[in-house]
Every structure is written in structure tokens, then in C-alpha cells.
Length: 225
Ligand SMILES: [Ca+2]
Ligand SMILES: [Ca+2]
Ligand SMILES: [Zn+2]
Image 1 (tube, helix red, strand yellow):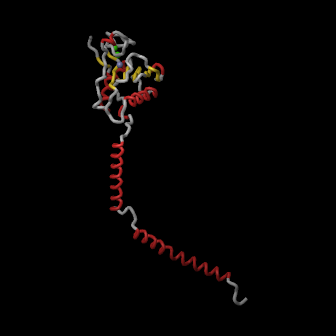
Image 2 (tube, rainbow, N blue to C red):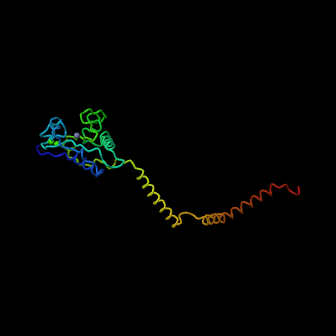
């Protein structure tokens, strides 16, 4: 087979998979078409020498598809989650470098607005996900991040316990620091504040009680009447 390259955007997608799932199974990975692909039209075939659906603008012999093994070997992270994340970015317009995705008997295509439809091809794609890339020169060449690190990973019970222990540690540190710095009032300190406040108010209290006595005297029936 003539020499070929994988388009840079898909090489970046594969390396982004490797970054979030360093020990992922690679057994079902693929890029260039095998003999079966060569006989049919496929983005896995090198585009200048093989049978591909689109003729692009350059003379570079490029492969426009990769297969990524579905077994990511990261607890709480599934290929389904990655596919749905990428679909979200494609649908919002944030990501334009893909033409279609096939995974687990379903296909999503840019040409129909990334609607999910049933995939009825011979290979059910349940061991790997297939990503077909754009034939647009600038999109092919873009090695911008695919942002896979933003995919939320479901927490295991062990993860949650670890986080809870870390929170408790920080909480205990805050309390100790607060006690050391006397940021909390002791009961004695509270009593002192009440005493000081009462002392400051005493003249007003005395003045008020004098005026109440005066008023009471005015209202008292006169002894001489
Ligand atoms: Ca080309
Ligand atoms: Ca090209
Ligand atoms: Zn494929």
C-alpha cells in the first residue's frame, strides 16, 4: 500500500483518548483500511490511492477515520460517555472536525444534524467506536484539544470516601485554626460583652426609670384634693 498519514485532527483525538485512558485496551484500535475495507468505499482507505467517499483539495494521501477500542479501563468512564460528550460538542457547533460516529449499533452523522439512527452494517461496532473525520483541509489539520478531559467521570464509592475524608481533614484544620486564633467566643467572653453593654446602657436606664417615676407621680391622685 502506498504510504499514507492519518489526518492530524484524528491523531490528536487518539492521543486525547490515551491521555484520559492511559491503560485502555488497544486491541480493536484501527486507522488504515485492511483488505476488507480496501474493497469498499471507506474513510479508512488512504484518500489519494483508495476508495473514499470524498475527493479532497490536496494530494496528500490521508486516512480520514480511526477506530478506538471501547474498553477504556477507567472506572466510571465509558466509551458511551465519550461518544455522547463528542456528540454534544458536534451538535452545539463547538466541534466541526467529525463527519460521523458509529458505536454500538448506532450511527450519528453531521449530514443529518447528528440525529441518532440505527446502524445495520455487518460489524455492530460494540468492541470499538468509529470516528470519521472531515476532508476540509483546515479542519483535517487542526490539532486543537478534543476536551475529553472535561467528561465527568462517575465516582466510585471508594472515590467518595476519599473525598469525604479529605473534606473532614480540611474542616478539622479550619476549626483548629479558628480556636487558636480565638475566632469563636468562649462563654466568659460572651459574659464580658454582656456586662460591658449593660454598663454602657446604665445612664439611659436610670434616666428612663426617673421619667417613669415622674409620670407615676403626676397620675397619682393628690393627697390634698
Ligand atoms: Ca488528501
Ligand atoms: Ca486533505
Ligand atoms: Zn472504523
